[in-house]
Image 1 (tube, rainbow over the protein chains, first blue to last red):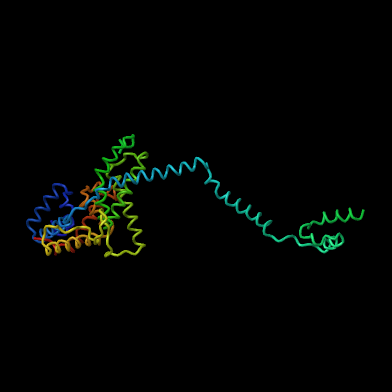
Image 2: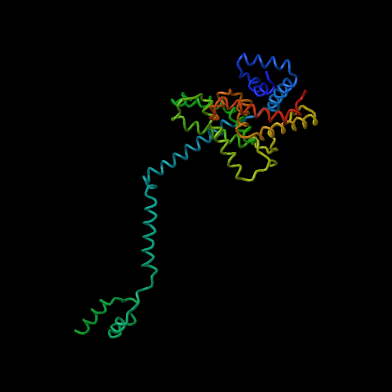
Length: 154
Length: 185
């Protein structure tokens, strides 16, 4: 067997992944070729070396921590379910609710914040004739003022 | 798992007993961080717990659980690429103590010199395994540290048995170059 071919198969040979026939051929080659035997020895030793050192320890609290986490998640899911019973399908409507709220707030602000309607020249004249200029801040309605003027004229 | 699926909640304890160590070993070898490995293992079991209702025994349970662990480890390693990481920063042990990133303690019974040499070798081994390309590293961890067969490793990694053989052949070659000069004997 050629050395190159043997070396390509050494990993499988060490893991016992070769068929009986091929395994015997490689074994025979390793007896006759010291360089390939050295290579096989080095591969085997480095593979063994990987397991050196202290074993990785598992935390003694691992199981307790796990069950604690499960309980925590269950209670979290439970509280979410309770909320959804009180507000069914609320989340599905949430974008529409937000838009409605913004619109309502906008309309409210328009009426609340917007300064009072400007008094026209005509209204000033009528209010002057009726002696109601001082009350104009309260009575800013032309229809009312017209009515008052009609009554007064009669 | 099927017992648990059918309502026997105590059988999940058996699953924890049987697999917690294997999953922690795998996650710790993959990430090199003890506390992160514990966290990943917790996440693995939580996923198994929540997915019990949908569990179908198409493959061996060990393959199923290791596949979850593999995906979570790869996600963590990807996330880690995007955040600063120092090899010198301390890690937290399961008991809450801080210690160096080297997760293997020297034996308390050996001399200080021997302990130091041992520790150096362990760091060397860990660095050699860490330096392997991700797939080679995973193949080594699954077969060498978790003692899984080529067939199981191939199912967990989603590749053919032949590919596992090739990955291990290449990994062995790299490890031999780095570690052979430090081999005893």
